[in-house]
Image (cartoon, rainbow, N blue to C red):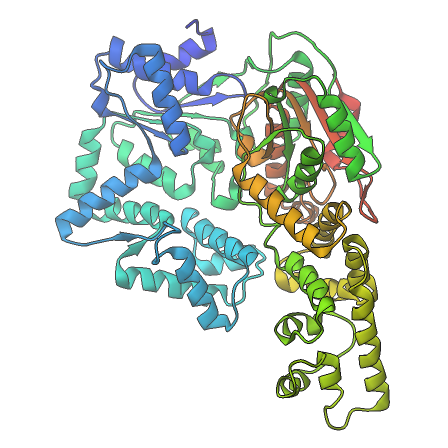
Length: 620
């Protein structure tokens, strides 16, 4: 394979620390693979004395496969490892020496796992069950604290959280694991660093085991990961990091791009290599990306450039509604090779309307993110419960879940009283027997009974609107959104997508079947030769497509409202990460890039992303 001069310079680096800063499409992985081969074939380094660390199992497999295809698999027993795999081996060695049995609690199918453990701790402390959204938020917070090597107090000082009693939950979880020798993925890192710091024998053993350390996707490493790597690489410091600080997009997991920016302070004699040639994208896309990312201040001053031709300007597309956005994409995909097309979005929720429209229009698709939390979301279940209850107003089990989410106050005492009466009667008739009710209150109950009778006769889209406005479920969402860790707008968006699906159904059974069918499609969409890829920008990192469509580019979503708020207070880290994420999305495109923004989401008008407004005057 012919390498450019930039690539060759990096590949030939031998001794001492080096940081290779490579733009998107510059061949980062190619350089690391060829540098590995150079060490082995030209400098006669034993492959077992090279430790190559990458970000994920998929990346490790890909690098091994590409190395074997370039240089042959039989004669060179090289290994590429994830940082977690390396740390787990270290912990097993330590455990064997010290006769300790650690149990990994990451398997969701095992009875003892971190998810069940945290759910139980949350219930014990807060006396309520944790929602799926809060569970994810809690796990992210715990992971961030450990990966950034900070205390829970430091986290709470600098971050907003919707988790009640986070400090108590965190400390209880950590103590339980310590007392029972349980470890999760984050513990693999912190425990490994602890072992290496305190056990000189094991540290020296690993230092003598490897002469060269290589790190792929260095921008994704966390603070604790980088500390482990730095510790093992000493005193030789033969550390070779391939990275792009402009593609650091995992701050919520504890990714630490400042570690790259401080490289020359840590290693004053370290070498910097710049790989600025993009071999992927057209001149149009590259020039726009280059100008766009330069707005960030916390970065190396790189220039992304290409020798590829101008093909077509990027498209900034403004439409009135979400539905028109889908129509634009569907029309543009006609007669295209779908496997070379990708639709990107900031949040998984954006996929819901897409899969509804694509399935209706018989467009095959492949979803990279299968954990879509829409279909089992509590809001969806609330709406379904309202409709089910309207068909049987004697169903107290369902009514208990919704009675406080609609207009008309009903007390828990009245609910408990109604439970003692004839369960075949309507809940409202039973409550009307409650002692001491005024005629006005009874009249209100009768109105509610009539409302639910009316609801039972409505089609699903009409029923949802009736629940939202006439039964005042909207007011409940508005008053409680922050308590559930949402903005009111985000809950309204979930409701909007439910209406979108309901519009093509005639009754509750049809709606339920449609939701189940789409949920199954999300989980099992095949990656065939004729499927368009649907992905969050995060999950598309490292991929490339001829045609890319970035959708739902709305201010407050992309960039997020929290990053905008922080930037207005002089804190720019979050907004810069949002810009990097947008940049990663744009740089997936080889030939065609459409950036699409709707003016309305449901009945709410929205503003285009401020990033789009920047780009309007910079189209190549």
